Length: 133
Image 1: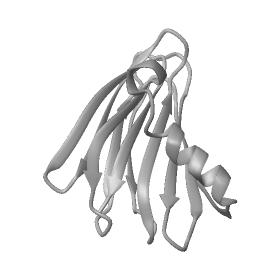
Image 2 (image 1 turned 60 degrees about the vertical axis):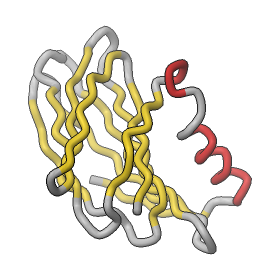
Image 3 (image 1 turned 90 degrees about the vertical axis):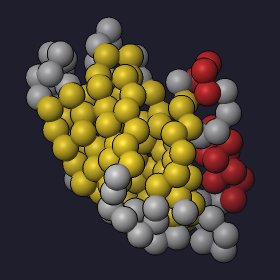
Image 4 (image 1 turned 120 degrees about the vertical axis):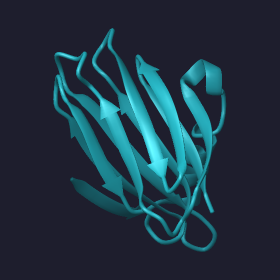
């Protein structure tokens, strides 16, 4: 796993926030609801139908006086099912989980936190958007 933090100009951060919330149906962005800032969450992905890896990029967008982005890069091997447990960095206001499966493959994805779960089938890729409270 790779975690990188960067301070971004406010204009670029505003663009990322806009991208993550506009045009849900046309762009494959799906607003899922909210995650609790103080709890870890799990990502369970079923990549068993794929002959190639699936890429996951998680963006943690900060706000207020700390305009920053942290991101994590995960790769799910071909023909496997994997679970990753993630902690939300302090100061995060929005999380975007971008899933990029191989071409012509749909992958099943479930995000769980406490007793809440969010399920999605990503066919051709999708981005799951969460507010962080």
